[in-house]
Length: 422
Image 1 (cartoon, rainbow, N blue to C red):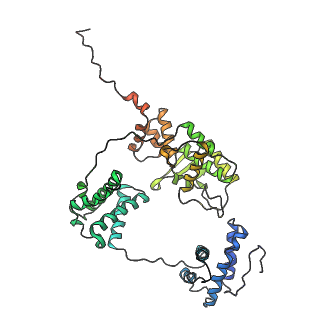
Image 2 (image 1 turned 90 degrees about the vertical axis):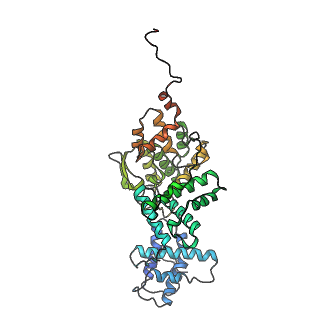
């Protein structure tokens, strides 16, 4: 086996002259991302097979070759491969094709555009209405759209969405009656989804009556507010347990400390970019919900933790602050790594997560409660947490009974002493 100057095996089969330098450039790009030479060698057989197969099919010129043509070749993987081998080769070839498209060497295949069904068109309109009228996040909108599909398929079957004015109160009761096995929580969730759906249908003129008024409501006593925060001592213990000298420990400590001091959400942590930090002014740009942005002061200990991570742990070319510690050092797309790091910190510190569940919001709630207990006005807390509504901030008030005690009047109310009896 012949090996080039950087240790990558040379191709053993003849391949088109235009693909050979691209093959070398792609493998070199993997090395530049931080992958080990041994890992890159595992990419070679699949890439060489694709290039040789392109030559056997007469693709001697790049003209007319796009992503879809390489995808057709990928779908004819050698039968000698095992099921796991086919999955591995397919993944490698997809990555090679994506690199060719990214480098603008070939054009991407046009995505298929199937005509949407009436039900899907209605779901799309519903999602737009929820986003514009109610300002809901993408994940919440998907949940409501799922409720639309479930109800209309339940009512009309394969003919969904059907004649919407034909929906009756009996249909609503029958649909909600299917939640007996899930209990009150399942009923409440379905009822909430239906009310939102009927408001949309009525507001957009799709039904003549506001059927939201036909959805039965439930009455349940308000239970004591669940504890969803940590004391300041517990917060410091969790943060101390996250410290360490490894790259992953430096990153996790910086992430958790930023959440604890600034009250950031998980999605706001993974959205931080290096360009968002103004080291000279001591400020950081926070990219919040619904595309909102806010500039916040950067505490000294948070800045020091970030610098420690950048200098002694962070690698790669991504402009995101927090990235994977493994090649190719990609940024996070979800807050799962934050929850995982928080879970480890809980276990190491001996602190039990509130309610037995690991939530990224725990530091946000803890910061709000700490400020409330020190007498900070709710308006200031809402500004720090970047709440859109003051009503959202008042939720924290019912968690702090001691702070509310001075507002309670004595009972029974003492009668004033009249002048005649004095």
